[in-house]
Image (cartoon, rainbow, N blue to C red; front, side, top):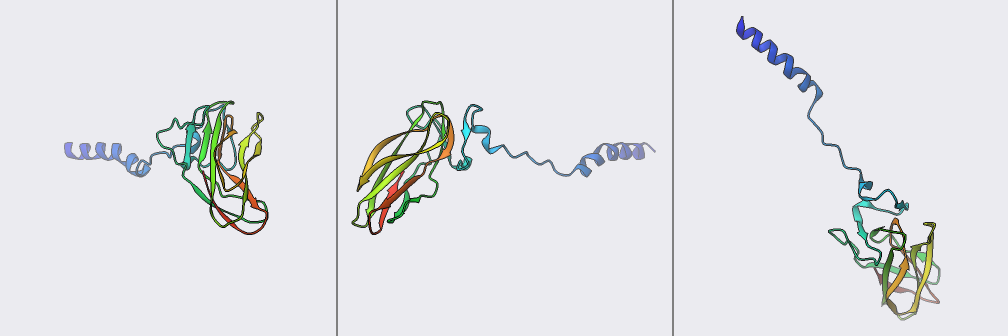
Length: 161
């Protein structure tokens, strides 16, 4: 009789746990790394993001900003998204660099940034064969870097970051 009571008591305690199924860890919110005061742009990719200080220097553990390829033609085109940046304040600036690595025609490039109202702006970043260290206003926005570019004639390959 004692064994029957112990088995019944164990079954009463364990049964609800078994019925509930295995515990599943809740997935973290991908936007949890974005401070409340930061505006999130539709291009933002939290899996490919780095937080930067006002000078555009990474304050995250990783910096996924690697060069991207872009093909420029005689029509304005927008690149695919580059790395995602989380601006730390309204004074944050980011730096773009680009160079023509294919073709013999000149390229004109515009870099994505944001104005004081967190609206997308496209700032001229030079024409020719490339530019380094083009500083663009970013602000307290979480978004992906992008460029726009075109040639006067012909096709050119551009590396940018």
